[in-house]
Length: 216
Image (cartoon, rainbow, N blue to C red; front, side, top):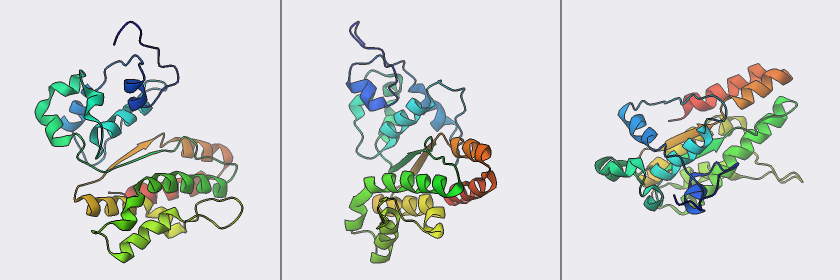
């Protein structure tokens, strides 16, 4: 970066940081390290304010179908030519943050979780016109994006739909693209911490265990 680059105060979006003239400390080597030690589930643990959210954003920009490869020009990962050829822009990516999933009771927190899942599902509205999905599968997608007819305008997911939401969306994207789906989950512990404070921990941990356990 040039001497005119700005400090990225409060910026946690990789694309914004790379395109809007902010300083960026190159952490793209994480992509190579992750692929070298790839598991079905990978947990990235760091103390608070160590850039986990920015790294999640970076991973999405690298792997997601239709991503801008120019975002990585001049960065460490760009030296890995074969790795970039195999993995960059090759996968559908589901990326959610649970930092706002909280409430004074379980119902309120559950509603926030529906909003997070529903909002992410709306990014993939092209699935309703996919030639690779059956009508039943398209209906499964629509159930993830149905809005309650009440004044609140919240996503109306049944327990079964919410519990299977990540699995369902992953399966539909896999079938549409004929490529395995990557699921990125940020701030996964926030709903549990808030639930523990408010007294509905067991309900929340049961819901998240079912959601995450079924995702693939």
